[in-house]
Amino acid sequence: MLKAQETVLEIDLKALKHNLEFIKSKLEENTKCLAVVKAFAYGSDAVEVAKCLETLNVDYFAVAYVNEGVALRDAGITRPILVLHPQVFNIGALMDRNLEPSLYSHRILDIFIDEAKKRNQKKYPIHIKFNTGLNRLGFKEKDIDSIVSKLEDNASVKVKSIFSHLAASEDNTERDFTNGQIVSFKAISKQMIDGLGYRPMLHQCNTSGIMNYPEAHFDMVRSGIGLYGFGNNPEINRNLKPIATLKTVISQIHTLNIGDSLGYNRAFVADGITRTATLPIGHADGIGRQYGNEKGFVTINGQKASILGNVCMDMIMVDVTNIACMEGDEVVIFGQKNTAEHLAENVDSISYELLTAVSRRVKRTFNR
Ligand SMILES: *Cc1c(COP(=O)(O)O)cnc(C)c1O
Image (tube, rainbow, N blue to C red; front, side, top):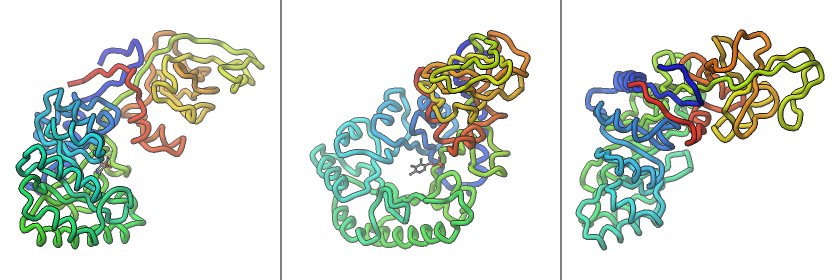
């Protein structure tokens, strides 16, 4: 990769391929793989990532919202796309693009069926979401009879899958709870299959579920964070490669004397001669204010430089007192060595949040 000359997010598509292969190595041969590309493919670039994964034959994509699915269709993605969290308001747009809804309540199921009938649809693929303990979205077991009665003799839609989501698949202290979710999902699936008279696909695992609950892979698994290089576990992280590297450059270097202050609200005051580097990246780019005041750090010429004072909208200042560097030098915020997970830990956050925060104004480049 070229040396950064401005703030860029480099996306390593070879690492993406590597991660997909590692995830697939954990699956039985016939288990399908759904790639979760919501939130711009976890802050990278949904279109480029989905195009790459399509050539690598992932079976399915998932996004959170309808507009994310529309963007993928507009970019030419042809594989099935599951929309995890459609709203009644955008069902029309969803159907226009052949996106497949997760239906999680009677309200949205009824409205969807009506719309499918109105449009003379035949067997429009739908996915029924069950709540087995996350208590976020989904039908309950007690809803099965009424769901089945709405779907019986209904030619306009067809249940392509039945699914649920694990609440704590990365947490080994919650194995009993997770096993309960799996047992409950099996019971629900059986009743649904009996009621429908056919067998849709079943799926329940996210990345940590894939790694920790091989007995719950069912017909398909849904991987997000794993594809992007994180496994919520040091052991698994060793086998994955973060695909995103956030880089920037040093715009200017200042030397502060004792008592000089730095940045807004004078949040940092030098207690010794302090050399600082100003970088063109701030909270509007995704480095939140919680990383200020030495909670966060960047890497310059292989050395750690703490963020001093408050994070500005478009800039941060870092401590380079003991680092040989000059204007124009490259700076790594996070990447394959100093990872997003590691940086996020300093502010009690997680890789997911830091990755998805990188704003749209940061240029994306691709290593193919
Ligand atoms: C986001 C999401 C996933 C992916 O989870 P990872 O932990 O990133 O693998 C899977 N399923 C559902 C329903 C999700 O919302």
